[in-house]
Image (cartoon, rainbow, N blue to C red; front, side, top):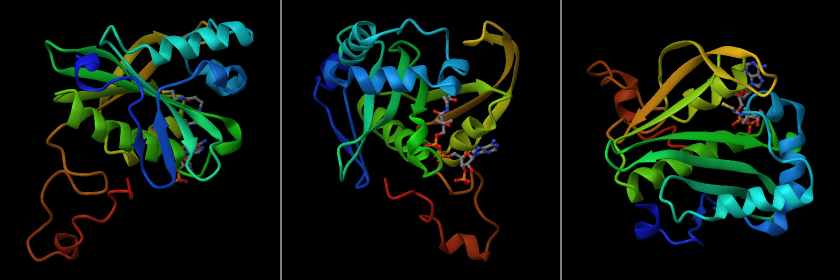
Amino acid sequence: MVAGRARIGFVIETGRLVLRPPRAEEAADALELLGDPDVARWNPAPSVVDLDSAAAWSRRGADWSAGDHATFSVLDAATGAYLGVVSLHSIDPVQHDAEIGYRVTPRARGRGVATEAVTAATAWAFANLALVRIELAHAVDNPPSCAVALRAGYPLEGVLRQSFVYGDGRRYDEHLHARLAGDPPPGRPAAGPAPGSQAAGDADVGAGGV
Ligand SMILES: CC(C)(COP(=O)(O)OP(=O)(O)OC[C@H]1O[C@@H](n2cnc3c(N)ncnc32)[C@H](O)[C@@H]1OP(=O)(O)O)[C@@H](O)C(=O)NCCC(=O)NCCS
């Protein structure tokens, strides 16, 4: 499905960020990202241990031919600096759903990079992959990821008990968030504002400049 709709080389631009498929030349950046203790903890146990395996990881991210994922490196639009990765994965063309994951390199955190990248990749996925639902799961013990989910327009749906083994080998409870194609833009209330309220006139505020 992905291969038919969006070729390798697809680029998303938000103004501040550029999202495009990974490149093997980014191996050193990918190795730094995946070696970060927080990234290693809050993701499955890493297969990347050196530059060669990092280059192979990037090449897998760039190969969308199976149609089951659409992975983007996230770059600073002004400098080209590597900031992280966001990936639509587990794309199911029968159910028209997918999951999304994200990682930001430590020096780029706390500036809204993950929120902006997830918002942009989500809008792209709904526009290009015929999805109706995207799920986002994170460990309950990972509050920064929860903040990203909520700000990118993924409301919390519930708690998945002991649902995933993370990088430290322990099994964690997770928050399940999801966004539907028809949900209001991030920042807009899911239910309509009370008639006559101030929010009724602010409906587009919070779309995030993406
Ligand atoms: C989670 C992660 C992607 C966030 O990236 P980021 O670019 O810093 O995220 P943003 O700047 O868009 O938003 C982070 C928000 O979390 C908040 N936050 C940071 N640390 C927090 C904490 N300990 N508790 C609660 N909130 C926290 C920040 O304040 C920010 O919100 P604010 O801007 O309103 O203050 C990044 O920290 C990361 O890569 N972590 C390791 C890998 C990971 O956890 N990936 C997600 C797996 S599900």
